[in-house]
Image (cartoon, rainbow, N blue to C red; front, side, top):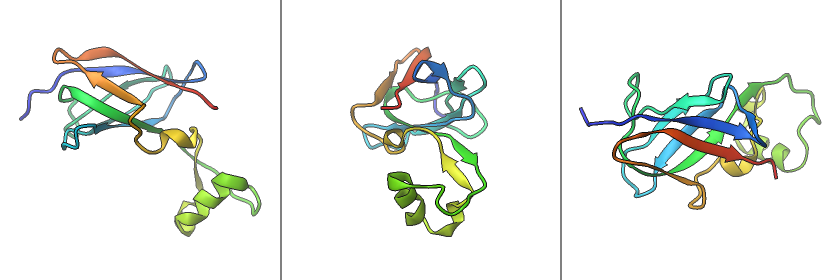
Length: 130
């Protein structure tokens, strides 16, 4: 298979580690080298390009971060912008809420990270609430 390199880091929100976040790295060149990872209690994650095998292809990536939490919904719980987003997807999302800021839900060119040829264990995804 392809020669992958280590791609590890930490995800924080307002300086606090985020546990249970899904991190997706999308190939910024439009290629197919995207990968993903899942953060632990310290906010640490390892990205995988191949299912079940840690490591990524070197390159530049746009990152998305989501953390879906199961919630028991009562009518009126979701208000404003988040309520509109929830209703766009039909009824099947009612019990799950993404608790990360919505701006990190889709890839953006100003939130990119480079994985060097030798790999990195120092990716810092520093999210902010506002």
